[in-house]
Length: 128
Image (cartoon, rainbow, N blue to C red; front, side):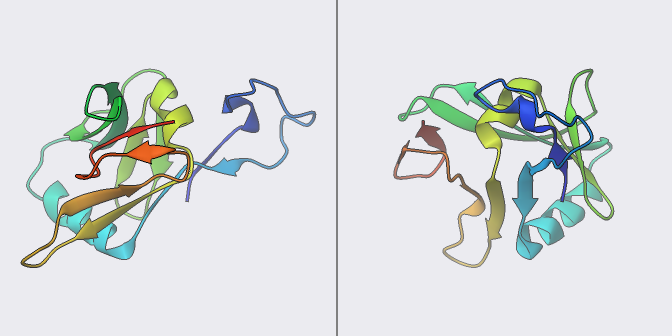
């Protein structure tokens, strides 16, 4: 699990003790981690980028791509790979669990976002 300082929240308040507890950013289920590892063997990139962008039927869409680390990224370390989030996406994706659903009727990567107040039927966009 990775963490960021509590001051990255929407309230914008810094904790009184800068070395104090931090909050979990994202989690990947075991199936998602396995699929990322499998795909990473095919990629020549530094890690997996999770993010958000405007669009989709609910207002914001999820972004998932293999890329290199960029200045200002939040880096989430897993055992043998890294996940990158830009600062804006970190705020919107805090608490997200990324899952992978395979099989005949599987949907691939699925975002479970506790902050989302509305999601579309395909699960690829959301609003807060």
